[in-house]
Length: 326
Image (cartoon, rainbow, N blue to C red):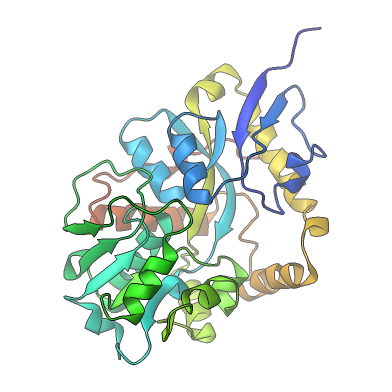
């Protein structure tokens, strides 16, 4: 009997992945070699884009940029992290009365090209008419992948702090008035819609630092009105694997659906209730792992935002980038 093809994967230690990580769900005819070293998301995406695995979770914005620049990658409609990014935008209480005051000011982020930052800038553009070029930029962390010259001058820390340790520098600078606003990696899904999570207490390590947008009803209204529910992380696969094993992407997508459906034992009651509330409020399951109208609209917006922000130059045909529709 021939050996099964071995596929290497770099995945997050996420409840919707755990059944696969634990070996309870597999892909018939294939051996899955899942990297047991769970690192920060930024480091994981960096490793995938630098060739470490056949399949990997990747920042959606970085993946689109890498494909535009010629990397032979495709996407699979498995979205681990989604949710509005308004709560990722922080300020220091009492120093900013309205978002329009950010124009001409110094704005910080953990990576200029990070997906959360791209989405947050896109929100400021669409909802508040604040262009990327309207602000001065400060970056505290290490970039994952940027393929073009930027339209703005960016001040950076050199050397940057390790992956996952970029937030506190921004919190300190906000509190001390060196920055007027900042975008940090934040809580996704139901926490992005309704609040809570680990990020606000972490950012509050320095006095007065809090989210600029906290109105639950307004965040939900904006998400439903625009039909844009930001996709943060997406599963990606090397084109050579698809060419060699054309049945694999569809089988892999179905395996992730099985793993998603087996996630409850890996979640606490609050998570289960939060995801149910998110689904009910939105009127759809954002983790259905499909390329529906909202998914296409959201990714097209991400592409548009990156062009405005100088991170991309072309509009990519989304349908041609995705494989593995179940």
